[in-house]
Image (cartoon, rainbow, N blue to C red; front, top):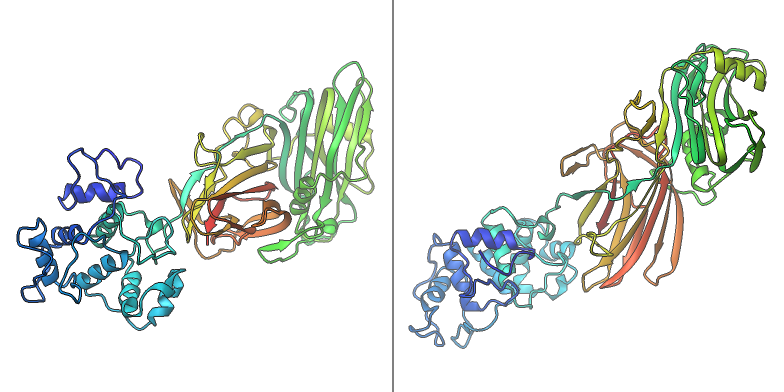
Length: 571
């Protein structure tokens, strides 16, 4: 159609108006969307766009628009229909670029809009940073057209800029909006909350193996939680591990209202799988029971957690510890396993006293050679011995749950506009850009090859960089948040009032450069229910035409419930 609008923000508006013969191009097949429009050209457009408008004035003539002028007829009709007035000296000034203010006032006149109830200056101050520059005689009209959702401002919806000459592309968007045509970018429509743009989170999951178990059972049920040992039976995966791998076990026990005298114990066993010594280095390791180590507490949605003392439940505390690289004293930094030797890395109690209690254990380690890993649970008056655990490992069955050897523990990515640009352009003011975090983790199961449970994100450490770029000529405040929307369908994300459905509970770390490029880091404990847009983890003030780097890290807890989105919103 036109050869110069393929990447223009108003492309669809221009095309739809051209199909209706409202706008026209130039002989070279260009449209020139950034070219200023004259008063005569705008008069011609108004007459073509609204041919049904009735005359409200008698015949009008201007001394600088002779009958032979190309726009004589349209200018006269536009004036008679009340779209325009001339100047006190009897001129129309047809070649003068038309200011945005005059173009919007012409639309107000055609639509016969009136401001209902509100104070015009309050309305204008709510939506425009430069409201004070709108002349008093025009305030009611501009407030009325703003309330009607007809003002289209590109690139910054918060700037009215009434004195600036309007461009052909801007007029196309304005007329398309007034005509209720599709294709008007809602992020530039003032007074309308545009639906968030939804994109998939780029990046890939790494290949680090994760020995994983999430099991819930009554107190009477004891047995194997997960095992990579080579013993016979479905309980054992027969899969040795070498190099870097991780262990994540969450076990929930229903004690009921009885108060048994003995506790349950959770064990983690590590066995040398070869005939020579194996070195084991443990970088990060922790194990907590909700009672007494991490009692459930009620917090606001976001709470600063600089020293890691805020947590609610064992899963919340364990992800906080892993995020900070904690290794509890009960776990050795290094150990040597002789040929065939087995060691007991954990022998942790899950005490009675509450109807439900749980223990979550996470370990990051490196082994020089192959080892086997197992986690078990049993009831005992005292901590079981290593020989008792080994006997149980070979004689008992596996408890039902989400159990397996999974691929991947880290999702690292740098989010940009596209592969060819090193920046992420912030959305227009009062708009949002959302990234869907819960992409399909295809083929995450290593063993068994067909997983016994749905794909899980548990244990995945997200490490996301956002090189935010403000492409506007004014400084912008940009909020970064995590949210748990009520639904994600296709390219649409739906937020709503919070429902009583816990989605995420854990600590997030966010590092960013402030306005003066000072590097700030915050640890924030986040408690979210499905439904609303999340509260900001940080608000970054970005100077015009400048970038600021934001980095977020968190570990997805085993009790988290998708979907989740990372949201960047320009305030």
